[in-house]
Image (cartoon, rainbow, N blue to C red):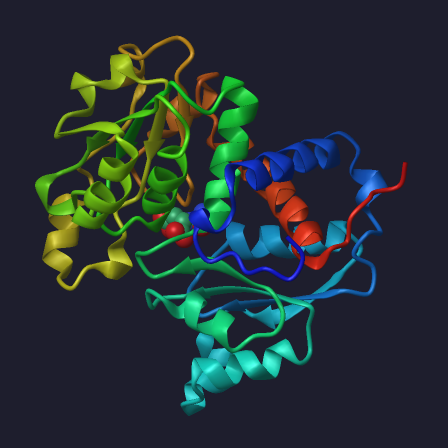
Length: 310
Ligand code: NCD
């Protein structure tokens, strides 16, 4: 995987993903053995959009591997505010660092960046399109909790239109046999047609669209809750009308299976009531931790910094 970019989940084969997750598990069990493997390497985090978890988990991952980080957390702090093109910013940064993690509000920005970079570019979110390292996080969480990746009934709930984590997860989980999707959203926030026509249908994945979480929660093995993506709405009135479409609370959790796994990429706004946090099926804070280990494994592979201390 050395030298490769990660722009969307399909960039890695299932085999490569399996190896990455096994490595993340090894690092998780023995982080000290990996604390020097990226010594001397530098990661740039270029965030043209706000972030808490993704940026900090990339930075924490690199620091825990013994590497260093630099970057910016808002476009106003870079020459973008002077009108510099993304291509020029990337050419510049790529001459300072060994690897770049980038988030940008424009769909396709990470792909474009990768075409101007001679160091690996990791897409940390491009508009409403993809967020592949959140998907590595989600998959590692599912693998650890469910001990399998196929044969699962997965509920995707909330903003399925603009939620990039949903698009990446749908694409990734469609590659494992026997997964079924319940697409729970208001009609205005339905999953884009291209996910149905270019992801679900070619993979022969079964899916159904529905409005009410209560109607399906009892069938689910995984419930992936999402925030309504305020920043992608053209009209604030629409956001206000749709923002509280779904609120997962203890009453709805009573209808769910005993081994349901509730995931959320975070940040949460109102869509999971805090009373659910103490339910053992609430997995979203554990998920955050898996994210750092998934990124540690990814960085070592893309940089070719293999082999922790034995
Ligand atoms: C997500 C994102 O940025 O797409 N956050 C994250 O990276 N964990 C989800 C969101 O912002 O709703």
